[in-house]
Amino acid sequence: MLVAMVARTVVGIGLLLSLAGGAAQELKPAATLTELQQRITDCVGQSNYAAALWGVKVTSLDTGKTVFEHNAGKLFSPASNSKLYTVALALDRLGEDYRIKTSLYSTVRPRRSGTLKGDLIVFGRGDPTLNQRLHGSDIFKALEPLVLALKDAGVKRITGDLVGDQSYFRGPEFGSGWAWDDMQYYYGAELSALTVNDNVLQVTVKPGAVAGSSCTLTVTPATSYLVFSNRTQTVSSEGKRKITFYRPLDENIVYVLGTMPAGTNVFVDEVTFHNPAGLFVSFLREALKRQGIKVTGKTRTLNWLDRRNEPLDIGRLVELGTAESLSLREVAREIQKPSQNLYTDLLLAHVGEAYRTGGDAADTTSEELGIRELNRFLAEAGVPKGEVIFEEGSGLSRDNLTSPNATVTLLKYMKGHKCGKAFIDALPVAGVDGTLRNRMKNTAAAGNVRAKTGSLRWSSSLSGYVTTAGGEQLVFSLMLNRYDAPAGTTARAGLDAIAVLLAGFTGHS
Image (cartoon, rainbow, N blue to C red; front, side):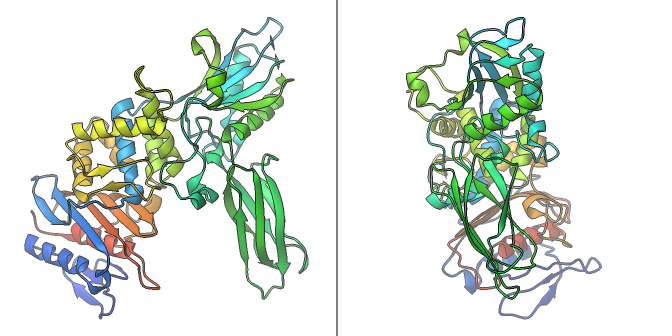
């Protein structure tokens, strides 16, 4: 395997390729198509990959010719390369300027005195951007547009309940094919039409003053929505740090276990929670209070199942105000650069609901509708039938399948799409930002390759765009499945090696 593709340009001569089990050798960039093809063949054919499965497709955007292919029509687990498909779907169906709206509803208008005699319903549609990260580390600033909208409507006091309504999305609060333990981690946060702070909270663990004492836990943003069972212990400075979090599914108690050496720095991690709409309205209630708006009723939530018994007729409600998400162009960036699972699956569900028809069964999930629309879109894009089999949008499912051929077809289609610039600009740039910021530095690929990464335990992928040293624009999809990387190496090194070879290619297809 290529353990390191430390490819530093050597006065325009070539790349330093380090091969596992062999001596480092300085190679000039491939100058002919035959030479480039042979080098990629050598890379995927190394003995380290004997039990693994490689899929590669490289096509010239300038000539339309296939530069290289290997198992290009076989189905692979794409991991987060799935996000390419969901983001392309959303841009195509909704447009890059589209914004997701969160509404404030009531059955009556506020009185002249400012009193709202009834419930205030916060109706979410999957806006992923109401978080402190995008608002100066202040969750209340994120909620400010909703508070100001209510003030503009003249509301000073609410005598009814504050209701967090997440019924716009139908189906489970997790994606199809997720593993149960995914939901312990930030990348498996619950899906909700009323999402807040990426549906995670940050927990800081600090060692106690002396060995034997419990560690100190701090939650950000501060809330009592989660209950912590502190089972930690401070150990001597020579001890080891091992902190774990465990939250039983559908509960909001987190068990914190493990040890922290005395005198060490803090440990910071993120934990998920159940029923995001509940935390949303909890924070909103506090935000209203800070602005002098008192809620005398309870705080409660409703989901799609609750609405079967208590149907919501929006046509009979008064919309007191709204808040809008970032533009879809910006949401695409927030998805692709860091590879954000939650945002992607929220977007798929939102597209699904946007295309729900009167003929769809009430229990057809938002995710199912999103996948249906994805399949329609892929047919329009020219993706061969049977080469994309998805069940959710982010790639966290181990059951999502696609081929390098289908991915290249999608990337070619989006290059000429009306939202193509927004789609490509959202991708990580090698050696610069996102999930590629620390990859392919000081190579011909740095600042050049724009590609989506993907990583699950036995799946690694890299698909996107590159301009060769010869000035040719290429689109590529690299997928490596079932590879158990030797200690001290990673699957991504082989992917990066091929991307660098493409970037350094001085010939033409």
